Length: 310
Ligand code: 13P
Ligand code: SF4
Image (tube, rainbow, N blue to C red; front, side):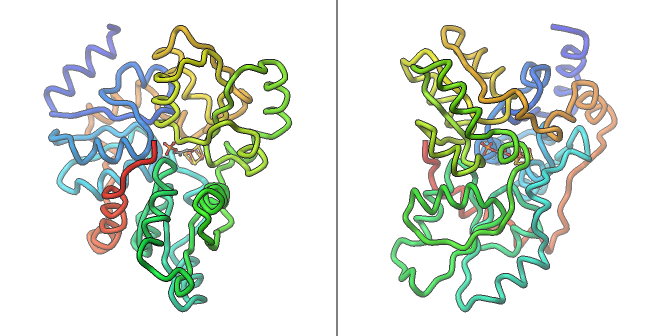
């Protein structure tokens, strides 16, 4: 173990801290994290840990969700500027105005949203449980009387609508990394180069990309699927940070990114030195005002009651 790794281990014990990391983090972060997972797995882990401190290596909405779920813990984010541009594509004001246009709006908020948006929502979802969450709204209710409003990701929304057969109204947000860089022409080209490979893509990709895939999965479900599958070659349509984990956990398999351009600049803001810095100085504490937290908690809790798809 290197010097920073040893220092971090000592500090974790002293401060009673755990380090959680999203799958898109840099390899150096994967290597020191206590747990690496997708956004649903990380939310669940945040509720299960009994440490006083959570160092959250991911983007701001993820750390904020951990803080909403565990208000008595100190949640630290190694770079306070690590945001999610898709989460910023809708404000609470815009959501309130959109809801006002409908008689019986039911808001499904992708977890990639601010606490203020969650506070205005009925239920949250992540990419791994979105279909089940939307189906749960439908069960036992007359859908003709409801208007499901899905925020903010139009691509995840259209995937859920197609898969569940449930009509929804979509906000026009998107993830710049998935939407702008993972393009159908790249998928077609790499499929030509590796015709026997299975194509796995994230539902934040454009519908034209999703329609070329063999499977559409969250990052965590993708990692589990690859491990239990006998196929040797996979084409991967998501942020390239996942390749480190896939290759580390499956040394006998080959992974081909649709494009190396699919990198989330915000995820990559977190470095080892910043992790060390926040733990030494107990800084960048993520907290949510109590009135917002109280309203944002039930939609997240409802989501956690619904099983993941994978
Ligand atoms: P996951 O739910 O797969 O972790 O995705 C989160 C995310 O931000 C994808 O861009
Ligand atoms: Fe947000 Fe996209 Fe980055 Fe995920 S990959 S955190 S959705 S910008």
